[in-house]
Length: 361
Ligand code: PMP
Image (spheres, rainbow, N blue to C red):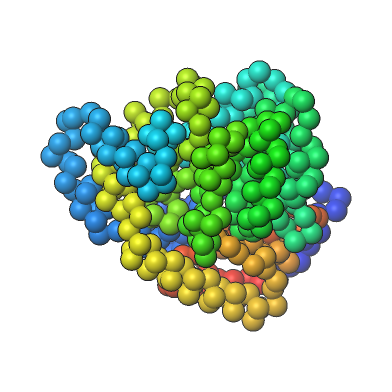
């Protein structure tokens, strides 16, 4: 039956990306390879784990001090006032809050297509129009087209850099120039969830634009390279007035638990730990590239901890067949093609993927 899965053209049928609910229903609790959520399987650092243990005895206390300490650490490292940082239980509640905040007065929000949906989707739910701008031929955010789409009704432009799901990054100088111009017309939201995977995150961040007083919001998370998606810590950086506005629709910081804050404090900017995770990720990524090449598949070169490659079969069935073999990946449709997005896992996970992939491809 597997050999018959050759019909992969999107022409003449509706695109079928498995919804989150459908995907969740398919996924067993135990997988050989958990490669569907762009997590970092090398996990939290030893210091972070120790901090979690240490926080247990004092967990009857509200985490006032923890919040203050993490804000201070981020503020010292970034060279920003504490009033320019808003913490949240992951970055996604902050993305959603921004979407609600900027979208509820109507108008439109702009994002790449495909890109991460949290922000524009929540803006759409409260009444804004969602303008989706297709990617360039090399699968990057089309900054020129996004800028051209801005009009007097635009409330927010969402720039995901590196972009999820394509793992592509835009040229820093071009993005900086884009932010300078576009932030004079509307608010620019730069999601830097995967920026830690770039060779020089400090050079690529748009935080300097925030410092210059531009109308920019930068989002970061501890869910990716820091390796604790399950603990839920993220933050946004922007001018105080913007954060105040977003703060009205979220209790952000007060949703974060003391163990999660403790882990973030203990591992923030722990360079040796982060470098180690980066190296392991890059070794697994090279292995994946090799497997894909050997099987005759192309892929989009990745600037993050996941890779997109075009499938030669129905995407939903591909996901199901992989899942049957204990490998969790996700499918996508765009540019008249079906795609697989696979996270970069541990080497044993990549090997489990390779075995299953060779069976069904
Ligand atoms: N932004 C991007 C681009 C993401 O891919 C994700 C998670 N997949 C998030 C934000 C949200 O992550 P979290 O809420 O864990 O910070």
